[in-house]
Image (cartoon, rainbow, N blue to C red):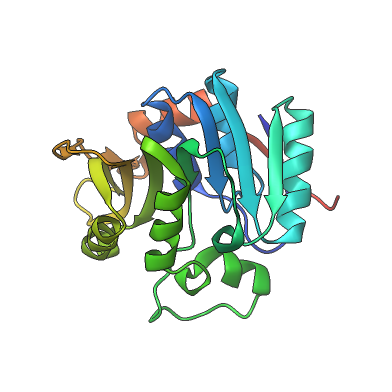
Amino acid sequence: MTLYQPESGYCYNSDSLYLYDFISSFKPRGRMLDVGAGCGIVGQLVARDNEKVELYAVEKQEIFVKYATKNAEINKIDYKIYHTDFLEFEDESGFDYIVSNPPFYHDGASRSEDEILFNARYNINLPMKEFFAKVSRLLKHQGHFIFCYDAKQFALVCAELSHAKLRVVDVQFVHSKSDRKASLVMLHVRKNSKSLLNVYPPFIAFEGDEFSKASMALYEKARTNSIKCQI
C-alpha cells in the first residue's frame, strides 16, 4: 500500500502497524470508524485486508483529510472521511467497530510547538473521559472498540472505559525488547460485554539490534510504501 504523507510534521510510526495487525486478528466486518485517521494508514490497511469492512473516518486536521482522501483513491479503498473533531461527530446508524491510534501523550509530557504534532500526540486534544464516552454512544450493542495507548496509563484507561460502560476483553502489551518495560498497550473493548479479560503474549519488536520475527512478519504483511510529499 502506497501512503502519501506530509514532508514535515507528524508521520505514522510502527504503533499504527502494530494496531492494524491487532485489529485484523479479530476479522472485523460491518461499519467501521477510524478516529483520528491521520493519513489513513490504520483504517485503510484493515479495509484492504478485510473486504467486509465498510470504512468511515474522522480527522480534524485538514491537511490529513487531504492525504487520507488521496491515499484511499490511489489504493482503491472505498472511504468516507469527515473533517471534524470526533467529539462533535454524529452518526445515527451506529458502528460495529471503532478503531483509533489516538493522541495519548499525557499532561505532564513536554509539548511540541508544532501544531500538527501537538494535535496528533497530546491527549489534551482528545481527553480520555470524553473520548470513551463518545465511543460508547456511537457503538452498536456488543460493538467493538480497538485502539492503542501509552502502557503507563493502562490503569487509568481501564477505569475510564468502565465508567463509559465499556469492557476490556483482549489486551496485548508491546515491548521494544524482551527485557524492556512495555511502551504501548493494545486493547480490544466491547460494549455491553460480560467477557473476562484475555491477556495475549507480549509483542516484542526487536531481538538484539534486529527486528524480531514477529516484526518482520508484520512489515511483510502490511507492505507499506511511505512517500513524503506535498499534495
